[in-house]
Amino acid sequence: MGTVPGSVPGTVPGSVPGSVPICRLCRLCRWTWWTADNKVSQADRDKWNARYREGAYAARTHPSALLAEWLPKLEFRETHPRAIDVGCGTGRNAIYLARRGWQVDAVDVSEVALDQLSETANAESLPITCIQADLEDAAHRPADLFTADRYDLAVMARYTNLPLIDKLKGALKAGGYLIVEEHLVTEADVVGPRSPQFRVAPGALRDTVAGLDIVAYREGIVNDPDGRCAALAQLVARKP
Image 1: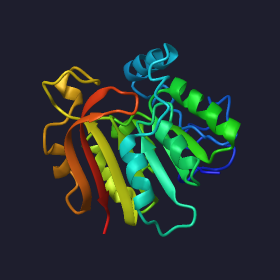
Image 2 (image 1 turned 60 degrees about the horizontal axis):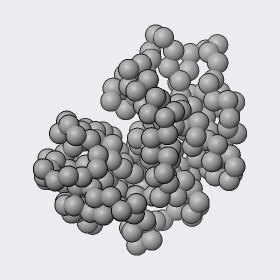
Image 3 (image 1 turned 180 degrees about the vertical axis):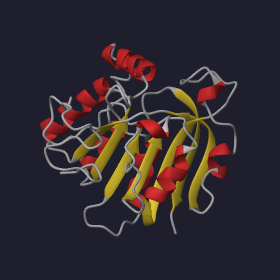
Image 4 (image 1 turned 90 degrees about the horizontal axis):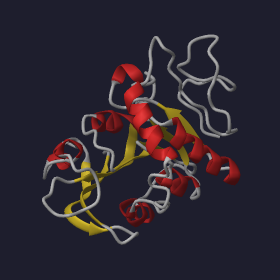
């Protein structure tokens, strides 16, 4: 079973003594929960909870095509490798990895999405640890979330937060891999956010991974497995 760094079985890491865990469903998942004195952004949580309650992305159960393409090509030293999936949503990539023997820490702001993920994890006895955290604000996430040299693989798919990549680089073990897929600024009619605030400029993703060895990098229009077109910057990189 995966556990959050520094957690104690039966407790919620990062919680205030005496607080009550909110994870109602899962045996495998442990959640980080912030009380009123140190809380996750309420607006962000409400926005994403509403979307997932309404069934947003419910049909998107396939993993990222980039992850599915590259995972079989990469070599890992560990017999039971560990991955982190940030901005995981309902966990399509976390589930894909766990079904292939990975221990996965899955991080998202929405407890509704994590509820859905934990149901799948429990039904299939998958080693997924669910962590609720506001990834936009360092003050609102567990201090030990990005422990140095912890992960063999870090995945960030279509969650735009380039400053977070420095944290992911530090959390990778030597020889570990980073797989990132971001919506790209474009004039084309594609899926994804309308605002350029939630897209990356050409070259911006590549520029964030200084110190890593770039295995693959591409930008452009791609066809998703569900037939829709997306403008993406896609990166696979290795930590020396």
